[in-house]
Structures are given as structure tokens and as C-alpha cells.
Length: 179
Image (cartoon, one colour):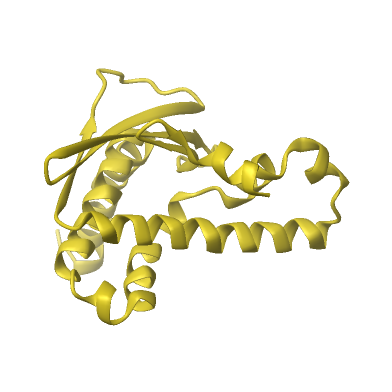
């Protein structure tokens, strides 16, 4: 039997696909992986925030942006009444402005915490529903800040953030009160 490189790659792909699906189907694993990637960026680019904050933010946003359901969060921040009354163009402009504001706030805040670690509090769950809370602790210097991510499954196996609560401050409500 002749084994080709193509056959080996297909076999490896078939073996790896369920592992990727399992990782994606667990919001705690997914957020832990992304959080550790952000910590790595922060640690390896500590001086970049002072010299080129936009480049630093871009590195964080590359990781963070795909994690957030900006349409849903933007609609929530607008409030149902205003979201429904707005035209499609107004909604898109609002979500775009909100997205920039959230990404800037998030990356700037992370940069200021400096040398930090993020620990995910894994539950014993094996089955997850459509909306879940994922709890983490951001450990900086001598302080611990609790973080709760409200995430939802988009039906394709992806977990997207729909709200963040940091140290008791609900960012969704904070942004809603600003607009």
C-alpha cells in the first residue's frame, strides 16, 4: 500500500478537526487561550505602549476583535427602542463607533496593568448552553480583579463575548449610560 503525503495530511486533519471542535465548543478553554495570547502580547511589547500606543492597541485588537459580537453588543448598548428606530446606516455607524471605543478602552486598560497574569476559573461543566458566563481573575501586582465574560454560541461553534464585567463594573451598562 502506497502512502502519500496527501493521505497523511488528510488523516492528520481528520484527527485534529474533532479536537479543534471540542476546544471551540468549550467557552472556558477558548477564552483562556485568547487571554493567554493577550498576556503574551502585553509582556513581549511592554515598552511599545509608551512609544507607539496605536501599534500596541493593534496587536491586542487582532486577538480581541474576533472574540466580540459587536452587532449584538452595540444593539444592547443602544437599547432596543433606539436600535429599532435607527436606520440600517445609523446602526452601522453606531456599531463602528462603539467598536472603536470598546477596543481602545480594552487595550489601553490592559496596557496599564503591566506585568499581569490571567487565570480562568474552569467549571466542571461538560455541556454548555447557548449563553454562558466565563470567570477569570486578572492578577496584577498585589491586586486581583475578577472578570466575567458573558458569551454566546453563534450556532457555528464559536463563542462570542456579549458583555464584560470587570471588578464589578458592567461595561455594557457603562457604555449604555454614555450613549
